[in-house]
Length: 216
Image (cartoon, rainbow, N blue to C red; front, side, top):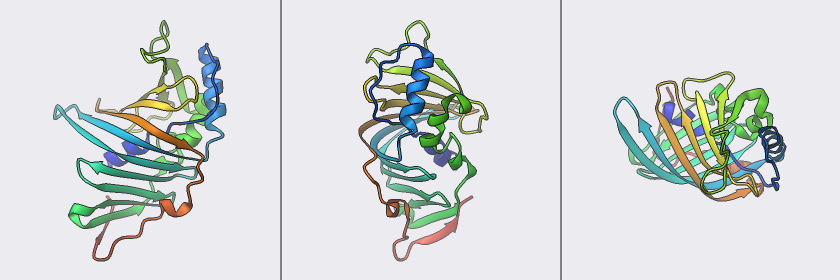
């Protein structure tokens, strides 16, 4: 469940030119841009670090997101897995186990941890915002780097570092910190915004013979 909610925490793109220089201008433009997003699709690579085990696990796949808490994370590596929600139910399907876990969509989907499509449209209301490095607010690739602290932290989201490219506000990288100092780092490519993703994308139909187990 920690993995699921951590993954939900990562929603990220927009399509508006940016001319911002100050933090206030960046915040204004991010809120404006994210407020216009209805859906997005992107490919991602992920690295999850578990501090207590001193272990890092890589993963990759494709993510689909839509306002209303709708999401679909399709992992292809290290093992195939689908995390799907229509905003009401959450499904986690693991083909190698021939099993699908299902439960009510967590409340986090309605807030900034699960729906950045809405959360980043209210950036100042949802987060305490600063540049990661105020003296040099862009990274070596020219991306704005924001350091976001949720005003209502969750066990799976205590801090978020976002790297946003300066022309279309697409997120290039996101680093999620939880309360135990574990991190999930995600990099995004091939992003498409407002492509009109149908609601059926976010409906899970269990294949024949798959065991249905309550999500705990």
